[in-house]
Image (cartoon, rainbow, N blue to C red):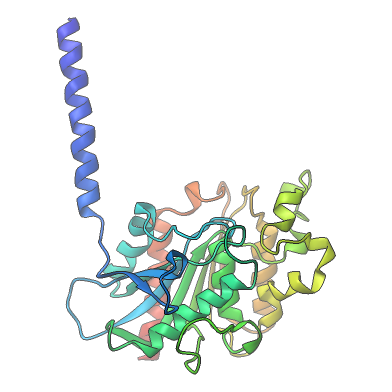
Length: 303
C-alpha cells in the first residue's frame, strides 16, 4: 500500500513537471526581445515585440503595460502577460508590445512613467517598417497602475503637456487609437471615496508612491496625473473593466473615468464584474478575449 502510494505521488509529481513544461512551451516568445525604445541600455526602457505567426507584411499593434503600483521597472516578460494578453491579441492579428517603464520608487517619480509610454508609441511609428507594425492603428491596454498609464496615454493623445522628451523620435505622434483599462486608478485625490472602501485611508506610503511627495500637498501634480483632465473631442474609444468588490482600486475610480468620457461624447463601455476583485478573477482569458475583439472591431472599422 505504501509503495503504491509512493508510485502514485511520483507519477503525479512527474505529470505536474511535464504539464508545466508543456505550458511553458506553448507560451509565445518575443519576435524581438529587449528592444530599447529610448536609445540607451537601461532595463526599464526595454520592450518585447510579439508578432502573430501568419507572416503578414505588417500588423496593427497593442502596447501592454503591467501593474505594479508604478514601482516595478521590469515586469514585461511574465507568463501571465503572455497568456492573457499576447495570445488573444495574436489570434486577432495584432502585434503585442510588452513594455517596461521607470519605477516611481527606484528610478524617477511621475511624470517619468507616462513619458516612457509616450516614447514607446513614437518609437513604434518611427520604426514601423523595421518591426512590421501598421502605424495606422496602435492601441494600448494595461491593468491596475498600467491601466492608469494606458488611460492617461489615451486621454492625453493630443496634449503635449505630458509628452516628455524620452528617445530619439520626438517629432512622431504619440496618440493611440483605442484604450482598454483594467481597473486602473483615475483620481488619487478621491481614491477611497467609495462605499466599498469607505473604511480605508491611503497610507503615507501609498500617498507618496507615485510622486515622492504626499498627494495632499501637491494637488496640481495629482491632477496632472488624472486622465479625466485631458479628455477632449479627439480622445479615442475606451473599454474599462472593473470588479465591484475591488478594495485595492475601488469601482468609483473607473466610474469617474467612464462618466467623464461619456460627458464629452467619447465612446466608453464599462464592464463591471459584480464579484470581481483586484487582478485575480477580473483579468482572465475571457476578459482579454473581449479586449482583443474590441481592438479588432475598431481596427476593421477604419479599414
